[in-house]
Image (cartoon, rainbow, N blue to C red):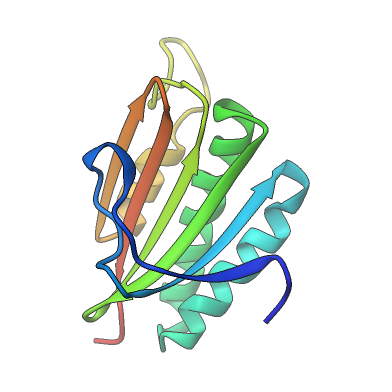
Length: 143
């Protein structure tokens, strides 16, 4: 295990948001914009370790990259990735401390990242508030 990836155990998420069940092993990585390649690497390793197909791993990495990029470009200069398994699913949570409004702005040509993520993940929830933003995605394991 690398020094920047910290194993944790599940604990309650702030603000009533859903997090890993208590006692669940959690992979955690704090990151900044230059760390995005490492975020993708960690996400890919966790998905492969979960036994996901190559196509499912690719979809997860695309979604994680999009949300992580949003977190450190729109939400603040640093963010946190957490990943955990629950049942047959792999959960990914990206949290920042900024205040941003999800979705494309009127007249913009970008801003479709969360829409793409919603297509790639089985579920996606966004909690955006004054204390930061949290995006949680669920990806099914092997069929």
